[in-house]
Image 1 (cartoon, helix red, strand yellow):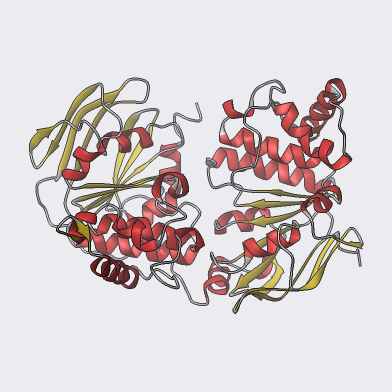
Image 2: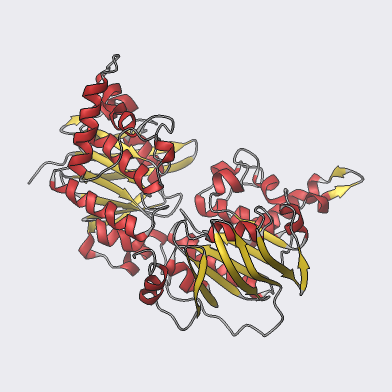
Length: 498
C-alpha cells in the first residue's frame, strides 16, 4: 500500500491541567483531500499548530515524506508543508508575483532578489493552476477569492506536497467556491495532498476523499467520505443529533412596523429600498458580496448616511447622525468580522458584555464591579457561553462563544431591532444551531431581527420573510415557508450570472 506523505502518530498536547489533544493520529497520501472536522474547541487549531511547527507536541511524532518533521515553522515550510489560514497571511503591499515567490525564497535562504527568475516562477505556478492574475497587481487591491488563489500559488511555488486549508471558503461566494474546488481537484491529480478544515458540511462531501473527526481532543470517527452522511458527520462532531431543518415557529402577530424605510438610496451601493421590520419578526436580506447588503445594514445602524429616502421608527421620521443615534433608538448591530469590529479580544468577557451598558452599573460616578460581574455571569448562563470565568480574556474563547459574547452585549440593552451581519460566519455546526435558537427566542420576545447573509441555509432556517438583494436593489421577497434553497439560489445569482 502506498506510503503516506504525511503521518501524524499519537499526538498529545496539554496546557497545564487542560488536555487539548489525546492520542490523535491521521495520515495523508499523495493526491488525497482529508477533511479535519470538529466543533470549535475540539483541538483542530492546536493540531495544525503542531503540524506547522508553531507549538511543540507533548508526545507523538510527525512524519513528512518519510522522515521526522522538526518542530519549527521554517523546517515545515522547507519540507513541503504549507498552511493557508483564514486571513491568508499575505503581504498586502507586495505584488502578486512577490507574494507567490516569497516562501520559496525564504526556504531556499535566498538573500538576493532575482526579479526575472521569480517572475518566471510565479507565472509558471499560476499556469499550473490554470489561473490568470496580474503578477504586478498589489495584493491589497485583490478581491478575497483572488487572495485565496495567491495563497495557494505561494504554497505550490515552494513545492508544497501537503497544503492545509483552514476554513478556505468562509468569505467566498458559491461561484468562487466552485472555482476553488476545481483548482483543488486539478492539484490532486498532480499529487498534492490537502488537509481541509471546514464547518460547511456540503463542502466536505463535495471536496474531500476522507474524513477525520475530532471531539474534545480525540479522534471519534474517521474513514472514507462515502461512509458518512450529513447527520452522521454532525453527530460525530457534536456528540448529539443536530437538526439542519427550518426552526419551528408560530405565526408573527400583526403589528405596526418598528422600522420602515422608503426610497432609501446611497450612490453606487443601493437604491430604491423599501423595507418594513415588525416586532417579533425575523427578516433575512440574502445577497452575494457586493450586492449592497452590508452597506444597507450599516445605514440602518447609523454608520453610513443615505443620499436619499426616509427612515421611520414607530411611524415617525428619523435621521441618524451616527451610530449613537441608532443605539438610542433601540437598534443593535452585530458585525460580520467580530474579531476586528465586534470584540476587545484581550479584555475580560465581563467588560465585553457590559461595555454597551455601563450606565446600569454606575453608582455615584463609579462603576459597581460586583453588580457588573453578576450581570455578566447571568449573561454567560443565559446564552450558554462556555468560559472558565467572566474574567477570562475573550480571545481564549471559541468562535461560537465569542459570537455569543457579542450577542450578550447587545441583549443587555434590550434592543427593539437587532441587525446581524453574517451571524454565524466561522462558527461550528452545533454552535450555529444554538445561535439560531437564541435569535428565534429573541424575536419571539418582541425584538425585530434583521439577518444579512449569503448563507442560504441559514436564511431558510431562521426567517419569517426573505428578501433577495442583487446589485443594490431588493429584487424578490418570499415568505419563509414558501421557498426552497434551489429557487432562492437562482434568485440570488440571477443577475450576477448574466
